[in-house]
Amino acid sequence: MRLFTALALPDEIAPPLLLMQAGVPGARWQKREQLHLTLRFIGEVDGAQATAIDDALATIAVPSFTLELKGVGSFGGKIPRDLWAGAAPSEPLVHLNRKIESALQRIGLEPEARKFTPHVTLARLKNSPRGAVMDYLTDHALYASTPFTVTAFCLYSSKLTSDGSIYRVEKEYGLTS
Ligand code: 3AM
Image (cartoon, rainbow, N blue to C red; front, side, top):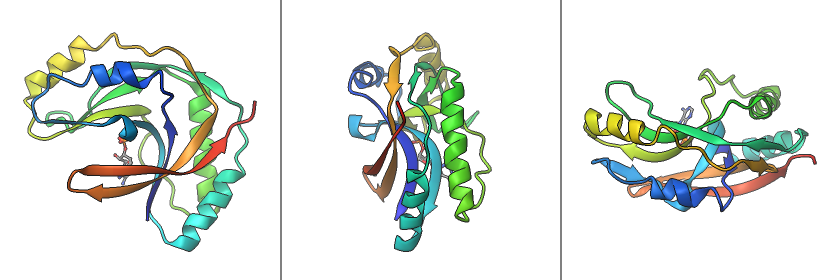
């Protein structure tokens, strides 16, 4: 199975994001149940590895913290691949991500080479005109969520289908209070 760790979004955070999902041709907007903030992508693993990963993640003890989503962005430069909402700079979020990274490295996973850029993907793009993407980023530049408390992180599975990815929360790990 294909796994990744992420934060699920609380119910009050989703509606404003869903209202922002319009105005870009070629955008495949993510549905409510697909919205998450990826912490650490893991990739394809077998059952024994999944168990080891679950055990390793369960040892993580970090305090819960407050997070705010802020601003919008797109990866891919000249050929934009996606649209996302960003996160306001958060030391506790980076700390949680580091803890996950070291727990996974301890059980033998290769280090994550990509820089951690916390974001909530709003749309995947296909042949979207760059101008429309630029306009979108300008129009939503001032987006900010209400602050919310992160009380857990999750291990998700991802199934790739022709209709997009199906993400499922396999496990939830509570943060300390
Ligand atoms: O939806 P977001 O952007 O949070 O882009 C993939 C998605 O992130 C990312 O993992 C999340 C769940 O699929 N992803 C896919 N392949 C990846 C890889 N090889 C990856 N992230 C890092 N390395």
